[in-house]
Image (tube, rainbow, N blue to C red; front, side, top):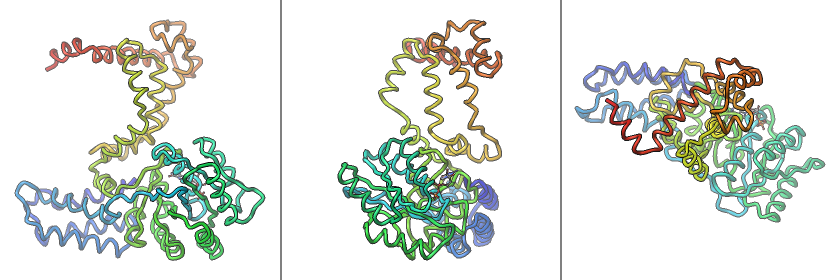
Length: 440
Ligand code: GDP
């Protein structure tokens, strides 16, 4: 995400590189480039102009410290202002009421149903909540099916009434059902339309007034750029929603919607969707996103994603196994699966400072682990637990079974053995100390 903007901002900063100080002239030139970069990213003109005027004024008002180069100073100013533009500080969901009612609104295809599932999963796994999903799209039976499938995947119950065409009655019945069963968050997925439509607006406004939701989240496809901003305005005028969810940011390289929506509707972006999987949801932190746009990485989010997948008990077990040199192919497979759950590889690597820019044009294959997984899956349970027992004839069988080659199988086993050696050394403090001594 945001690759194009990163590139252009980089170029704008070059104007200042090598300049000893900030002057009217070099700032004006840089601001012109930055404004161009923002307009190319599909930020609306008014927002882009207000933004560059603000940065310019702040830059000229600064006494440049000798220790900081003009480029560094401007990066810092840009970082602060970009974060401000996107809402400043993080806006948490209001989920204290029991039950909390959350209404999901947006056009068809924006990602409402997917987000409803992701949100239920987030609340259940991260916030210790017991959510109920309510299928309120009475026009598309497929939407009800889709929500039921998602609910099944994440183990969250779904309330449906396939005989009713009345979204208000369904929403109310869903809330009653949640109260009866002790579910403390009700997420109501609603029907969208292909475009803004009076009937849809009336319908959702009625659902709003009859359910009194604590949160109304407007879901919009970030890839639609300025259209996303216009749609947000129309929905907000009618619904006065409490937050925005930007979906498909994984496919949006320009980022215009993320940058302008807050300043146009004055409502915070609360979540971003970065993929089709249930885990591909992030709480939106304006400051972290600003750093990512400026290519400064986002280590905090990276660590948090890792922590989300990290199970302390499992980790302790793993350590014990490593210490006893019992780390086997089953453990290896489960590690690969945890990494995969963290999300899109390129997106993850982009969170490492400096790496985003470097890998911008590199294709990173999310399926890189597939051959490794099929090789391990073609091993018998005995082989997985006893890697040393995998002799030549077994290797040939594994290669045939996994649709790979004997060279690939040999390579994986060799890498696995090397890895075990290193692990073993580091789990034995004396041996590790000896090894370190030998290092330059
Ligand atoms: P709805 O009509 O608003 O309920 O939209 P859906 O939830 O059915 O989503 C429409 C399509 O967008 C589906 O194919 C989803 O898998 C896809 N989608 C939703 N959110 C994301 C996202 O964050 N990233 C990507 N790449 N696809 C998404």
